[in-house]
Amino acid sequence: MSEGPRVEFADVHAAYGRIEVLHGVNLVVPGGSVFALLGPNGGGKSTLLKVLNGRLALTKGTVSVAGVATRPWTPEALARAGVVAIPEGRGVFPNLSVRDNLRMWTYRGGMNWSEVEDRSYGQFPRLKERRKQLAGTLSGGEQQMLAVSRALAGETRVLLLDEMSMGLAPIVVSELYELVGSIAASGVTVVLVEQFVTTALGVANRAAIMLHGRIAHEGTPEEMADAALAAYL
Image (cartoon, rainbow, N blue to C red; front, side, top):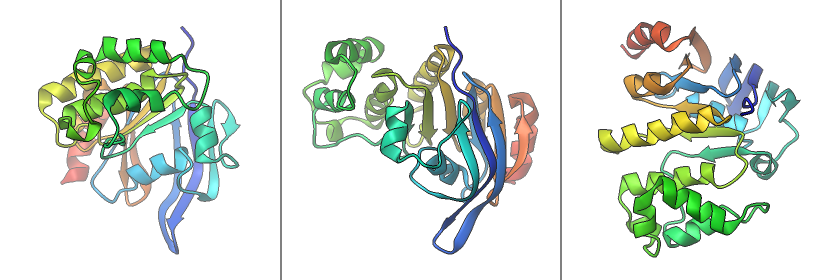
């Protein structure tokens, strides 16, 4: 089993228009780990994910994956290199069937359709039962399962998860995060943004708290539990 790629943010600044929202973020995500970004809304967590997958340009600093700077890359190039993002709101194609959504994951090339289907249905039997159903008519948990199946579809090296538990029943969240742990154990580096501290720290190897566009604290899940409580208050 190969270790996932190390991800590094060095003096990262980013802005929406003239308003700077990341103010010199320095952070190292160990390869093959689950790294949780915590903190209240507006802290810059989702923005940091957008920078990592190329959806928001840096204004200063560098982001590197496995020692290679990502700054010249487009989001499409990053996706082809194995940086897979599952955005808040699940990011499925609602007007396509479950089966066609899975097929869409294979269009970047190099993936065997039957293997993708077998892997996804093996992990999520409910998707097989609903393979002809429009994705937009699935329950929230089923849509999230379909979104996560993207990470099982190819050579994912870095998986970005933004608020995966939002609106889902605790039992579904537990099932999904159990899968996230197994994905990381297979050699994928996982960076997740999560409002529910206990949920995130239950699966994370390391965690950081973001406040006002900066890393306020970083450490083990045990060290971050009390710090997170103070940050949210």
